[in-house]
Length: 124
Image (tube, rainbow, N blue to C red; front, side, top):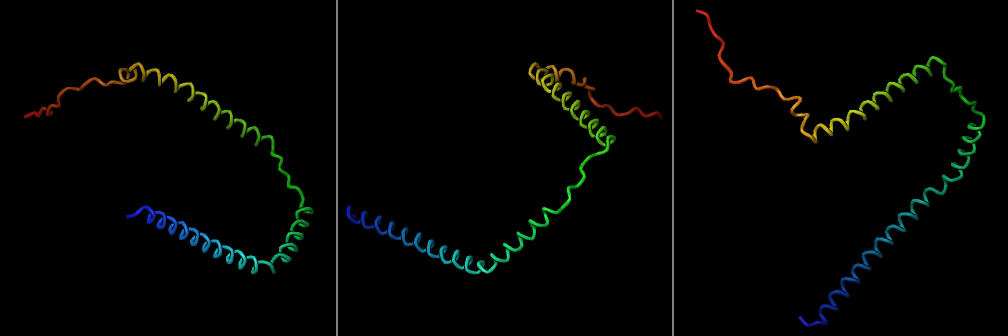
């Protein structure tokens, strides 16, 4: 193939790509225009609705969010217990890692071999 045929091929591919992109852009533009055209009558309705909802939000009383002292004490006790468990867990982790690094964990928890299994003795 001569060198100029490659230039024609790549130029044709570039033009095809531009045509596909232009087609997608035109399709997207018509889609957006159609959606906005159908949504335009809804904008005054949305403005009235937001005005009514903002009026409701201004007149709504603030709920009482205070807790009884017994509930607070119970929650604090639960939080303290969780914190203590978390601290104990964090304290155990480095110990376990050090044991594993030294190989002592396997030695500590090794079970002596029970030996070969024997059939139970039967009395005549």
